[in-house]
Picture (cartoon, rainbow, N blue to C red):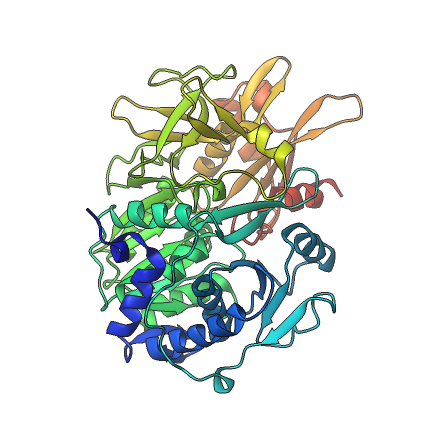
Length: 498
């Protein structure tokens, strides 16, 4: 039987804070903050919030120690936090405020007037608070959302994903059960924007151990900041987006991280060939591919990628087996479970699954389904197959399959051959563009300087049927990325069609 502190992520963090009060908890912009400072400020914020009306608290996503303390303070108070990025369009932030019902606003920089005047704004400043460590965690309703993350919606209206305390604790137990050999001496990376859910585990999980979180600066190029911090602070654990490795490729011969014991690749499909090239840079690291939609609380499957013979589909690494307590099915279009080896949509079930979109019953009904036994599944939109070992192999998105001349085409297959032509040294994206008569043309975007296309076209013609060969090829030196460090396909489409 687990003790409460073993099952509750927040309680485990408070326990670690009291045990390791004088140890470093957060390093940001070359400034080190102890557990005493981080949790002392969080405890003071918590006391302030408890005396104020408003169950949903907006937090300015500023890359500051006070921002991280605000997250902890809201969690300790039993309220729900929503991150709002000051650099995002004001209209998008206004929609999120309206949808979530934010009643209080925490900021620490210059963003006090970012929200409407009727929302009470509180400036969080380290010197203005006493720094008494919280002694414990009050009983909080496990169904109350810990946070709401807003993801892009196909209608242009952001979708609110509420992750309850129950969801977060189920994730914590399952994530810990993966068997990490980590303790208070570890140094762990936080490279993700605070509006993206991978930042939640990158920040919170190390604090359950007494370990130190290293957040990258907001200024400068992100991937160079990541490399610098990993080397300078000799990090032992890093979760990174594959785009970091792709952009770092010119430096593979110069960089080496012998202290790194775990490399987690996450946020988008992982290119096994690129990872194979990066292996000499991390001679002592176990590499783990972690997958999960926001709706299933950050991650819900894991695959330890072997140095040789990684399972993949068109160069995209397998996503492995479900977390402890989670279940899945590979479903046909009619919802029937498919046997091993057949490709269908991945459906996910289990205690990490949110109960439904925030204020979005229609969207919930569209994306969730209950089977005949009463089990609730989330339809991920990801195409996968399960192999005979029970590993899930990612095969692309449902929306990256198109029909041309009656043939069903998987765009990832074309992208794989393009990357192979360039010896996996660059990224490639195939985008369907629909003409006025309803027909579909394939446009290929290659992330490199402009060059002659003749040899590439000949290569593709030798490996693909004519109907799969892109009609147009565009060279773009640097692909646009969204806040999750994924290639922004919508922005890319605008670039190639303007």
